[in-house]
Image (cartoon, rainbow, N blue to C red; front, side, top):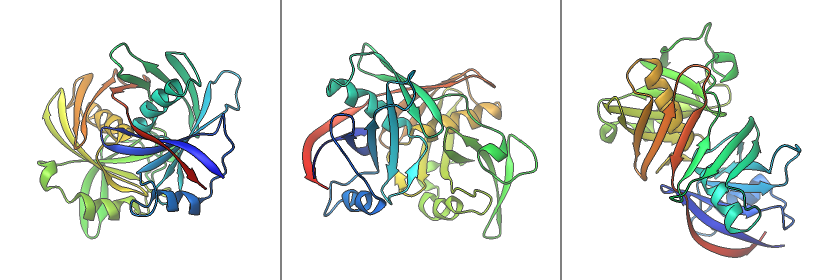
Length: 276
């Protein structure tokens, strides 16, 4: 089966994007893993699948697969690429696009400067819904990792995140500690791990170890979760510039019960065809 695709990235977080509206596509975890191989496949952090919606109030269904073949609930950088993809492929002419995800819905807005703003929804803080094993909701939790206790925040942006404050992200043990926390038993569905350095109330640096992928150059949901964690601790302003290895995102959150807004770029690298 010959399938058309686009290779895209959001601040270096790269994606293979496939239109499953205008062409028939069948994916298995093994197929995704094969395509993700950067030596013998297309190579990507995640594969994004554009499908027809199952709900009449939605424009598309948005599905995300990690490089290891697992399907996940949400991806902010991917959502921006999704919005640019459906307009470039003329699947829609809308500037405000409603998409359904595995954990609800999202609103994608194409702005005048070609930036994409994504309404990421209201952050989930109740431990049972993240999911995270804790007796009650708290701004900071103590997490035991190989004999050491870390103060962390637990937030879901449709997918689970654990956020740690560090003095210097450049020196943070992202790979080593991220791999261990990703599979911590208190996170039954595994977790994305963010390492945040606060530069000022309106600017932070962030590195993220994504579950099923490893460290990526940018993580949109991770940037949102980090700002929520910092706001809950009273350390950050309402709008924050998040510096990631791949570039910057603007994240805004007014507070409890309000949605998180993420604004940033999306870039098409090339288009191609491949046999699945």
